[in-house]
Image (cartoon, rainbow, N blue to C red; front, side, top):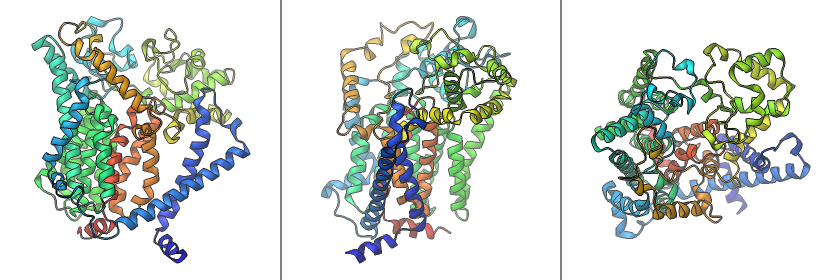
Length: 587
């Protein structure tokens, strides 16, 4: 027995042994010290104790052992070409055809989504539709730039209402569809029906195509069963299939993109014309959905180009790298012409402004006159300490309407700030860091710890309604559509969804931070070969995106990881020999 275990441990690669303890210590630290920041005044320096350190080391060892077991088990289960008997016998043939799988998903999801017909949406779409359906003169005092907000110097000299705050091209698609709907029908309802159904069928197709493809290569029924069940019955995946928002749209696109990357690898670059069309579709919709998508697709394009340089490099350039280039070039040109208003630079500084706000709160007299002069051009510094909320940066950014505790106090001076005022910002930020680094660590932990702590329930910002009747100048839709998203059935469905989300037994399966931890723990398995590793790299990049988001442990910003989690389980069911052998033959 000992000799057998020793042989299995010797089969683990050095790179896997390198990352397993690092990931274990990382998760052990956050799962012991992360909960300190559940309380808004939590501090790390005052929380180090011998008992906690022992617990952290013990938990790290547990994570380490679990990952070692997972690496051994997955490799042992899928090491050969022997395939389990078909799942559910002859009924498994249903999985051979994506259209048959789609029928099943449409039926199950359709029943669940009846109370939410025709779509659900958050507040972002209100702003997006407003940009396309209004003009500045009609909303002079409370214009769209005071909602996000966008620094007014970015809007000067142009009558445009079209901004890149929520993604310019997605804003145009949502907003112009709604505007056309209003002009023809006098209601936004047809637009919601069209957009909701389009996204729903895109989600159904992406998952159906994925299940049908991976089914042919999965050798073990355990992975197949778990992956398919988590796809079809996860309520977060289901309800977001009709959620009109950038994050769900990207998550759906990413599922299709990952499946096509796996198909490219398994078929050693031998792909059809349909693959080309679908890859182009997944890339373009992903680029449209989220502003940071271009970087993810560019990195993946370069990695795939390097991998298949001798075979189908042209298709990779056409379907990934070229769309990214055109997208960035077109956006840059439209911004330079004043057609699109760029997003405010403060959006990329969420962690930094949280750290400065916490610094002001704890050391209000610890800022020199020269530092105060720089910061006061950007913020009303005296307000930052009171506005600081460890879990969300919006109050400091002066956005959020009346949802925050200080609606009448400004943080970010978006009305008067100038572009040159940012030039000294990083210098002052570093200066304050040198004075009191512990404050910065506390602000960073408060903002990020929840994403890596399985005990921290995420902020459930999955939408359940359509706030369309709040769009200025278009009135409430009481007469024609309001009842569709304001009725007892939908209200009860939302309550049921929330109760499932809060369930202590299996609610964690719906949490983004659970899937982040799962991805980190699965990472060593994917290091077994380049073919697997290239698939998980874009998932890891999304963890960084979630951490940089404006909300601590937000469910919405982890949707890409939640959506891809079951796909990763399906991929684990594919023999490493299949992936390695196919990949080695590529050129």
